[in-house]
Length: 204
Image (cartoon, rainbow, N blue to C red; front, side, top):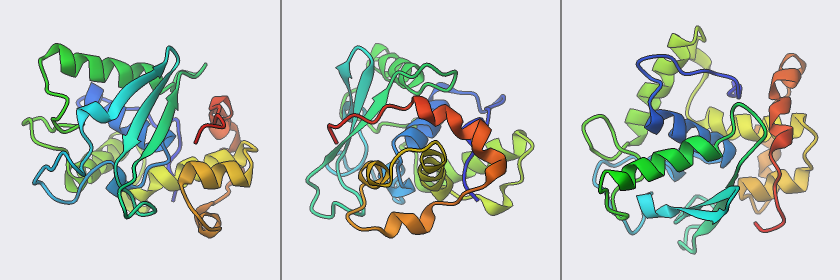
């Protein structure tokens, strides 16, 4: 199944780093490997670093994706995160999270997301907290995985009327393969209409 954009975080999971990680995954159309490495050995040359989030305009951020499934040569790709007129706008939480890290004297070359113990957030850690959040929200985690963020973003965009070409570009697919992942459920259209506020600019 794919992720609803209205899943709320509850204590003890309503933490800036968890909220920011979830919002970046969804609004950035990110695959889990593009945000949370499977290894615990941090390498700033290829893994997400704090410096990978930067200001673009007063209303947008850039997440520099160093390497992905569709960029095996590591040319990097800018992912744009916008300030939205919505209660789930990703711009403010992510900006505040990054600023708080720098305020605590974090180095730009440190991992972008840290665990409670100050280690790099791995795919295992991300998945564990994601499933716990679902359970705490009264949602059965049985049919969800970290791919639900990417699938949910593509499906929500399609439901909101965003063009196939825009979805393909935002998902960073060079083929039509993304269509296989788009899943429509008419019962979710009203809740997912929030993504219509997401304004994909012609700069990807």
